[in-house]
Image (cartoon, rainbow, N blue to C red; front, top):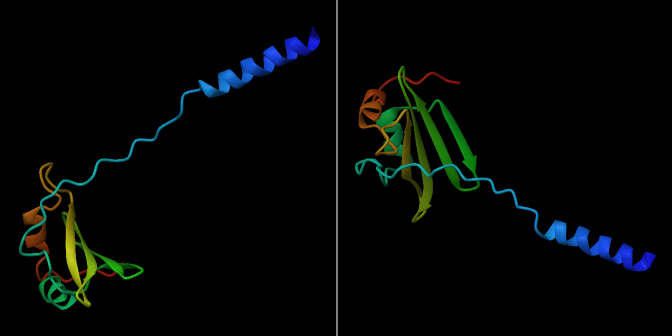
Length: 118
């Protein structure tokens, strides 16, 4: 009788484990599309010519992120290998409009602005 009671308890515990809800972590929303067409495919050299030296650069393998800072906004350029050269494949600004990943006014304000070093 004791064995039967233990077996029932064991099955009840196993059943409780099987019905426990699984915690799910929601991913943050992806940034909206909307990179400026004139920025896509820019090479490192043309990016430096247009915006100067970035305030920050990060290298992750053969991918680079360049950040430019202005008084009212920041721009992030994501460069990926393309036919042997790194080219801009994504642009984001902070802040940005809800309908676009990059604010054209922010990007325009960063043209030829000397970048502080961080």
